Length: 433
Image (tube, rainbow, N blue to C red; front, side, top):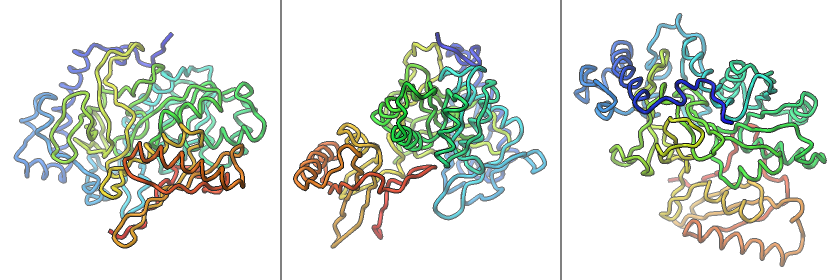
């Protein structure tokens, strides 16, 4: 039996969803025009005024916002409310230049908590559950978002944050945690650690996991589900739009339902900006319909995915997004070929390896070098050179047929690739391009 946190909106008719969006969008555009000079100037440069936006059919007339705009407007340039109305910030884990800082009013936080509560209930959560939140707390949105959602549902919330794996496992076992929220790479690491400690899947009280903040493959999902004895649900969000809970998976696990009463999604051609029809792969763009502190219109996420309105047997009617294939800015172009880390992960997991790998790209004599360091699992670890060579060849052949180009595989001993308790660092690009 499927459960809903807010059934009247989660299962609303398409007409009702459209009516909500058509009512909210013109008001939000006017609000941004009146309160955010940076975006008003972008609209003026495009020759658009709020009067031109009468319904969601006019959305395509508005200018895009990019990450570069957020950096240019840092820190307060895209804020729509005075400081006294804002109660919190969150910030991206940006590795280059200025960070993106997003502002939240209390209403923004209440709305975000509701979205995360929908995700927890979709994963089977109720007020009887013990929800262990092992995303990072602080500036990162993961911890705060799922914590707020867990409180809304009425779960007993364990604000474990990330790291201190021994303590995480102690709480899971002693407090009988039933729902785990963290990054998929950390869930895989917890599973690996528990297995080493002698726990079997049936010993572990967890029933569900809500994992997001990084790209992960179906193969990695099955791996995590097997080792922890759970059902693993995907959740999607980004700091710029609110954090996790923009979209979430239901029990069907066929894409994530986008909370369309709060966010409008579009898919565009990343090269031309043209809006693409439903079902076509392209770049995901979000418009927030009722954010007050940091309202973004037509924000380009750089995530590559598809959208579908095909009926979902869970009963939810909101449009679904596929698991992002990767980000257009995560995509590596190696010897002219587009390579996504998720493709490499699929080959590794299909061949029995854990998702502990590192891609190292360099340029020697004007040619790209492409190495992948892959950790062997403890049961395949051997010093038999012939066996290692044949394992390498199987992986190299599998990667060539998946990617269309040759990679050099280096098999390394278990536990030699550094573990991350936040987002895993998968790519080291040494090219000076």
